[in-house]
Amino acid sequence: MNIEAPIDHKYRPSDDEPFMCDRQKEYFRRKLLAWRDSILEESRETVLSMQEDTQNIPDLADRASAETDRALELRTRDRQRKLISKIDAALRRIEDGTYGYCEETGEPISLKRLDARPIATLSLEAQEKHERREKVHRDT
Image (tube, rainbow, N blue to C red; front, side, top):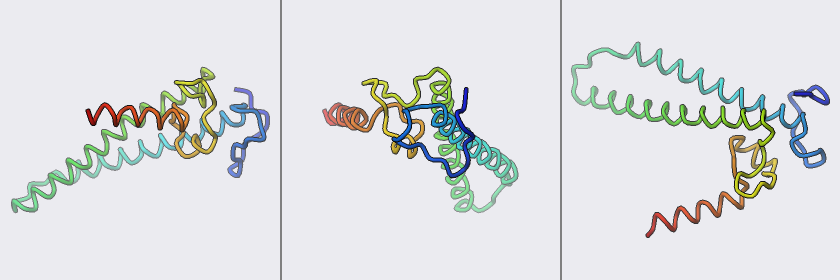
């Protein structure tokens, strides 16, 4: 990827530059990689913690509480595993040039939305429409 200028930590994508120019792509690539690294580090810490906490707890209430905590932690890790998959998909879209464009309309996704949710695949309008359709199908 050609970068027009080095990106420092103060850089924020702006509507004043061409949409998904090299600097913007690099900004989002770095943001996604940092997010993924953070999730992976948390996962490693959780695994280590769970390995250390495998003691036998004689009190039934304490054991139930520990098992509930463990189940919650495993559900959280499963959600994060799915999130990593979405992050990897976003990184592939950066490489293939489709990142930042709505999968439904082909229109650019706002930079504010991408900055807040860098794995977004739908524009705000398309996402709202999608959620309304889901609600209608769920309520019927």
